[in-house]
Image (cartoon, rainbow, N blue to C red; front, side, top):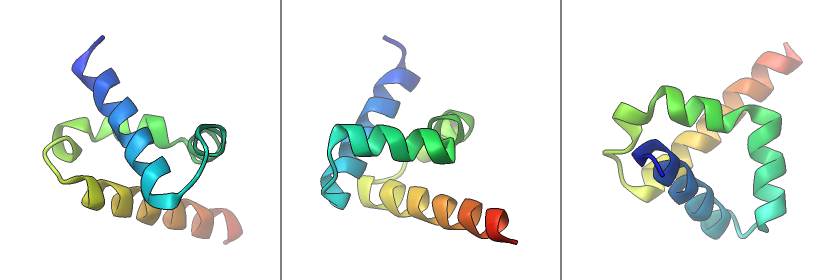
Length: 71
């Protein structure tokens, strides 16, 4: 498995843990907001950050996407 793939799994698991969601809920959430694509695009920066920062960054990205959709 690639380092990016391992990072993606790490992000999914950490997001699930911090948000107290099931794996299915996280998968649906990530698909709806294209989070996997975002994480892969910014892998070089994000993989150096701590897990709480990554979870907060994902939340910020989701908020930004939601705001754009409602505008």
